[in-house]
Image 1: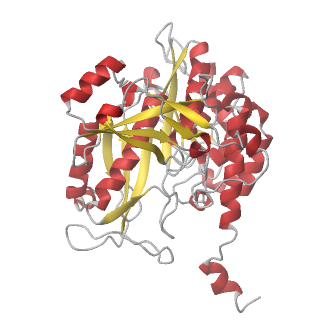
Image 2: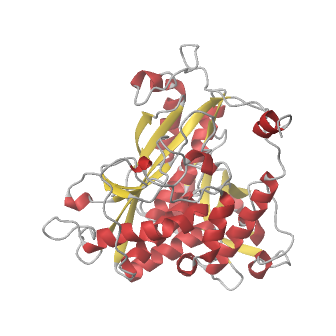
Image 3: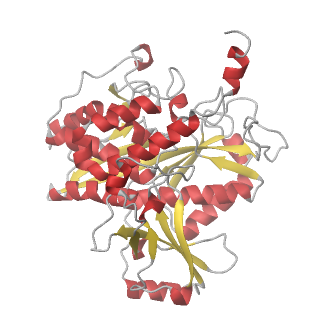
Length: 455
């Protein structure tokens, strides 16, 4: 397991001097996963600076809108109060594409009394990890993140298209696992790997996925908080590298009609800290009760957590039958048609893969939610259904089909709210309702094409 060294503020100062940093990007991930914050001159950045931002900055939708009234303001002060930001020194990285030596560092959000702001995404993941810590468990995750490279597109009414590669041609067919198809974008990926190396991101394998221009990057397994930070940084990195090569990188769940959607598959296991043993395996190597209970928890709570795993109206376009995305919460060993897969692995590496999560999910929220489902499964000893050994696509839909349906399930699930925090669920749900209402104001081309003259 990859673990990044913890550093103190005095060591951070030394790091700044060694890298001749002149500016510092002080970052806070919001509910969408967007980097909010401030850019400071190096000499203005100090441990006790007490940088502040309005608390609503981390609690707004992808359109930047806020609710006008309602339960949102039972959590968020209508007085537009400040959060107090504290840097996490262990997150410091260079900004490799900056002209002047620039550092980026993620901050945690606190209230005026020194308590973590409960609806900030990083706070939610910390909360869940603390529950595992209290049991003497160490959660381990490894995300697999898919994304599309697309040609520059400045008109939202024009469909996205695959970009032109080194050959001067765009992909016109699916090239799953093609080495040559990846090599079409060698200059871009050389920059991506160079940036990742300078930022000390623990990326592993790069592959071409099924869709035209669709790629996947795998991360080495590690502690959830550090890996959520890495996914957060990686998304910024790929978007920046793509722009420098005259194309876009998108983590939309379903950016191109007729092509597969993009997921963030998350492999997860739990280590017993006292013994160092994988909690999912007995001493004789057989699957443990905790392995099955964890799966049972995912099956029980994934439908209610769907608004966290599939956070936008576009997310639900990905979850369709026979499209390399799950439609239900069946589980199976080495079965990619199910929503919950257990790869073939030795006992020490036995793990569960949540295949439901979209690439558009906030990594902090998604990791917190999937770990919460498994945690509840173990604590409540929830038995899973029998293993699915056939094609799960032949079964029924068991997941919400829309954001509205998913939000209703999330609001009704008290167990998840108790683990993730009721204030977080309230703020998140209210924000997503605003986004859903905004979407419903838009008339789609499908509606004009099929309803204009026929109804």
